[in-house]
Image (cartoon, rainbow, N blue to C red; front, side, top):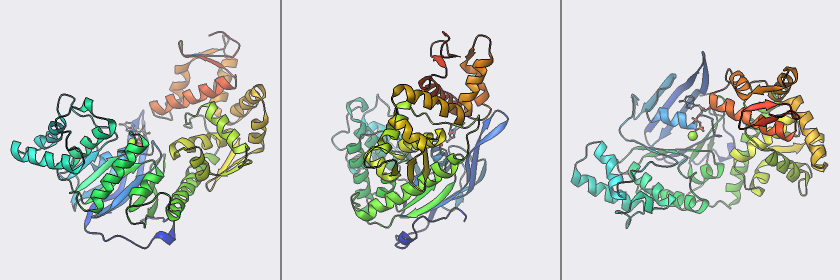
Length: 444
Ligand code: ADP
Ligand code: MG
């Protein structure tokens, strides 16, 4: 299988005792209709899961993780490819597959117990066994004492536990989790992860395998036996990494840190290196990164101890940023010509170093110059404004142009990013109220 490119060969041994195959995904692709053309979100994804495994699906936001999970849950169909669950071709939602989401829509008028029972009622379990099983799930997940509480009385962490209880109560074989800890604060998330892993290693969970989607490398290394790295645009499994550590894992262990760093380096190399070295097109998607973050990263890099050059994992840790936060900023610096990113390192260019030394006004001028030179959409907006008699243009004009290349949401985000940058560089003005662009010195 072409996807099985392994990142760290030295961690490849130590495979856990695995049982039968639970899930097999073969050549799954999925596109979404976009005007006449299809926007390919998942491209030839292959993966399989055996009994006894926790497998992580790691990728940036927008890489298609949720789409893949929804396909596996039988909620949507792949455009092509096959999903086999417990040896049978998947046709719609399968019995024994439970899903855990970032946040759960609990029924506000039902108690914790009733919320957990609701899942069983839906599959026709009678009142008595329903109650017994719900109580057992509540007990297992650490909610005892809260049976009669209503969702509004619970903290975010407790509500998420109700969600887990609701997933577990149906006795699932496979548990699919879509960023289940990402809406929780750091400590609550860690407690819940640890509790869940304890239950897993003590074999007290009914589940045979877990597929967890995350954009957090540390979380993946903390929880998973194996990590599949998904690239973006389109989503493809580009690497498979075994995690050879026994539970409970210690985030401060050297080997743990090294694996996190390795994955980080590989992901940055791939995501920010190869992809952004190509010059941008008019229809390239741009991340929404504020000029404050751009200037902030340039300043941090220029200063001691980095002096213009840093290791991405290290700087991420220093700034307490996750991949979803740091990648887009580094990527933007690279697009603009202020930094080079390769193999997990980021280095300021000559221009980046100069920017760091400049005062506000000089920075703005320099930023404008680099923006117009390197970001075709910014140059396009400027050109249209220059050419129009009134030097004005409505937002929708550019949004429609972008929508030929991007989804509506991505077009909107890209335009918002360029608006922020153009305002900072004072190459145009934009009024949020009238949604009109104008040249910087023209009233909107
Ligand atoms: P992730 O979970 O990795 O953040 P998603 O699977 O939610 O990614 O989305 C991947 C891409 O697919 C995004 O660009 C998103 O806009 C697009 N997408 C997801 N669902 C739909 C849909 N129903 N229609 C059109 N585009 C969609
Ligand atoms: Mg998602």
